[in-house]
Each structure stands twice: as C-alpha cells, then as structure tokens.
Image: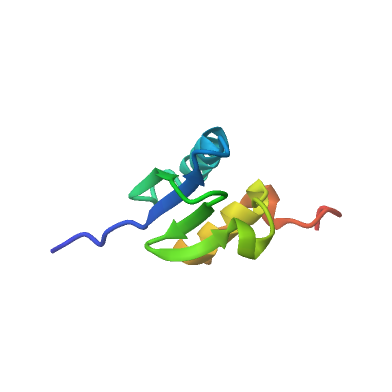
Length: 100
C-alpha cells in the first residue's frame, strides 16, 4: 500500500527586495503549525522584481500584488489549512476577538 504524499508549500520571494527573512519566518510558522501534515516548505529566490507568492502543491494561494501585500500569520495559516485539512482547528486563530 502506498502512502499518500503530503502537501508541499512553496514560497517564492524577491531577492532584490530582501524578502528572504520574511519568507523564512513564514516557513517556520507553517512548519510549527502543520508539523506532520506537510511534506516540505521550500523557499525559492525569485528573479522577478517584487515577487512574493505562496503555493500549496502548485496552487497559488497568495500573490503579493493580487492580494495586496503580505499575509498576516492568521491569514497565511488559514489559507494553508483550507488547502490541506479544512477541518483542522487552528486554536486561538480560529476564534474571533470577543473570545467566542
């Protein structure tokens, strides 16, 4: 019996804009939250000016120009969760500000 492949996240960032640390921080956040659910998180230095894209298994879930900047951690984790395991509870990130 074959084991299904785990999803792969790719973060492509602009090297000219010095966004490597931002990309690395986002990768660390995803690996911390989705430890056993992800096959990999790959950082790809982009050559196109201003590029910052996040894909799950080649499906684009965030594009800086299209989506208006960079995702905050809640938005990033929610979009990844919605792709890999929509039923997963993200704990405090899934709760609204009033604590409900």
